[in-house]
Amino acid sequence: MFSKVLQIFKIKDLRRKVLIILGLLAVFRVLAAIPVSGVDYVQLKNLFNSSQLLGFLNIFSGGALKNLSIAMLGVGPYITATIIMQLLTMIFPKLKAMYYEEGSSGRAKFNRISRFLTVPLAMLQGYGFLNLLKSQNILGHLGFFDTALNVLLITAGSMMLLWIGELISEQKIGNGVSLIIFAGIVSGLPNAVKTSIVSYDPAVLPAYLAFLVVSVIVIAGVVFISEGERKIPVSYAKRIRGMKMYGGASSYLPLKVNQAGVIPIIFAISILLFPQFIAQAASVISPDLSVKLNDVVTRLFNNIFIYSAFYFLLVVVFTYFYTAVTFDPKEIAKNLQRSGGFIVGVRPGQSTGEFISKIVSRITLFGAFFLGTVAILPNITQMITGVTTLAIGGTALLIVVSVALEFLREVDSQLTIREYEGVR
Image 1 (cartoon, rainbow, N blue to C red):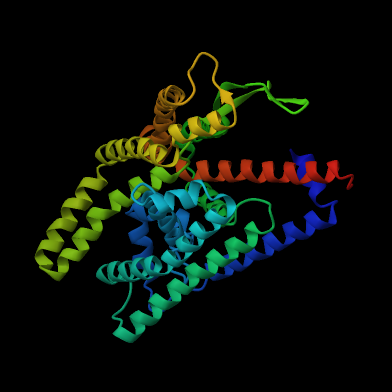
Image 2: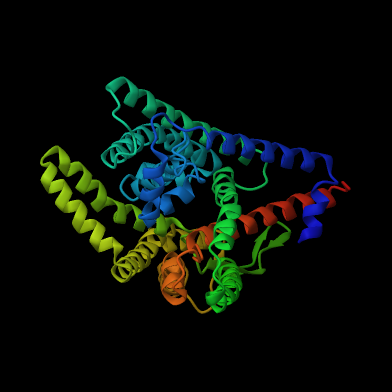
């Protein structure tokens, strides 16, 4: 693995691409350090320490949310826009045809619409988050002009990050949006290590050792599940065209254990955030009602057992939901039939679709429980060790490992292409 990474710097073209990516990520970190005006950082730190939900959103902003920078929303609005567009494919057949049937040109149109949708979503999220901060006395009183200016700055910051992500993706070494999130998570590691060292207590040394052992096991498990797949053997019928015979080969249909990635966790967090936003919005009707609702929501989510159970259940449900949205066994069965492929012992067409659907349901159950466990892993770690500074960030770990594996696959493909072409 490390030898392949070192080979990158021996090839001029790849070295240039890597340096461009590193430069763009450095620009992202600069944007993440430019704060909006009028922030009370003491109150802000207390808010983040008391809310796991905001800590999760901070992961997807690449650490920019905790600084209240102009890039505080990160690529979150774009991720939300993409999710909405994928859900709309279930309602509008034209969008579904654009995404699944029109090839690369259809995907390009689909992504363009998602980028347009990102702008209003960033403005709405920016405005809502600024109101939440004002209600917590983190931001001072802002007039209409100052609020509008901050919303525009936050929206511009998100769109700039999206543009940086597109520039990174153009280098053909990893996905730009994923690498931005990856860079934000990794940038927080030194501070996390420093906090653990400063708060070290010799009396809990066994907890620290157990934490290291569990961390290694979890990383190995994440790699195993992320790479795990069920291979369904597929055979192709022989066809004679002119004087030549085609087909007759055997292949397999790979079905990943974790088809949904981290999207179900994002869905679950959105649902968990909804009661807090309702409580904040209630202040328009009645300030007293808003205070009461805030107290109820806070007490409910501060109970680590209730919060973990509800979070786990939502992740499992949304894993099945998102897999059903993005994976269509009937469409795969049709494509196999068109190409002359069939699963041995299963009739082509509808029977093949039902067979694939049954297998996907089984492996998705395992994937859903894995994602649910990963999501509540910080809570489990704290309950077992009793040390709040030790928390294996399951979601962050899943993202880091997935992006690292994707990056290594891209590097391997780039090196393979150059070896095939005779480039050394």
